[in-house]
Length: 185
Image (cartoon, rainbow, N blue to C red):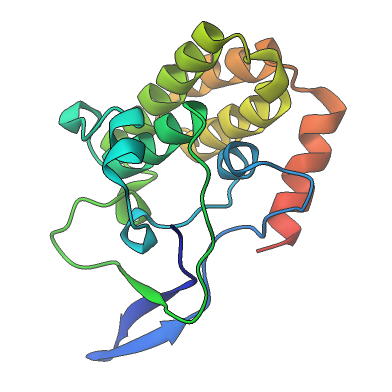
């Protein structure tokens, strides 16, 4: 189950509520397609059944700052559906000092590496399930976004991301999806 969520940011010593910091979900996307192009529910806003958690492969701490995102994407690949709840709300505290979260470290070396490893894990799972081609454009957008976040600090990873984006279909549709995703924030 997924409940609506908001960000909490520490501003001048006070917690301030902000809207979600992700792209909007398009109605024609399934949860995994949307997640790959920038929409998400922070895992803290999800209530897991034992079965769904098991289908997601359980917690895997090898991936660093994106372990929770990996868990959700694995579950989505396995066919778990996010059921939207109403009435309640979760709050995601962003930017806590000393915490290793993807939101605070997505462009650090550890964050970039973790994001790469998570995406390649999802590619592998989609390939095993025979659904890799269906998610090709979204994977291209995800690899493209990761490559752009590398900037000049991780040239080798940026080049791997560019190759992966091209391999998964890059091109005009991925470019349109990227523009749509940026405009929806």
